[in-house]
Length: 108
Image (cartoon, rainbow, N blue to C red):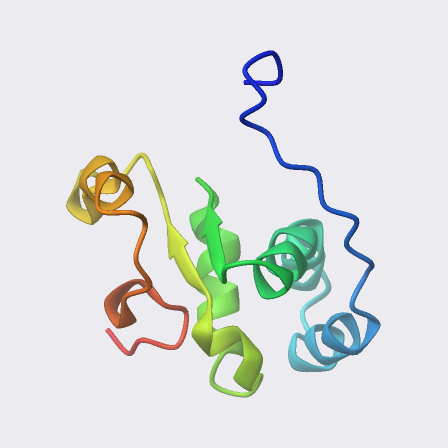
């Protein structure tokens, strides 16, 4: 991917306000650590196209819960490429559109 120039590098700073809101949201230390491990993915998504592709369902579940209280998380689309039910290949072929049913703010 690097050799084919398919990787974009972005200089994205830590979003301290978002990190503080996540810390306040999650009182369970273990779950908070899980969320903060992946916070850079959300910071990048918010600075770019609001998309995250990750296998981490625990973090996704925690961020989905947090989206009820942290509004900016609601617009992030999170796709797990291992879940065939999410049709990740089709989603990519369609240009990775933002869709409510994949967003963290979507109520299942």
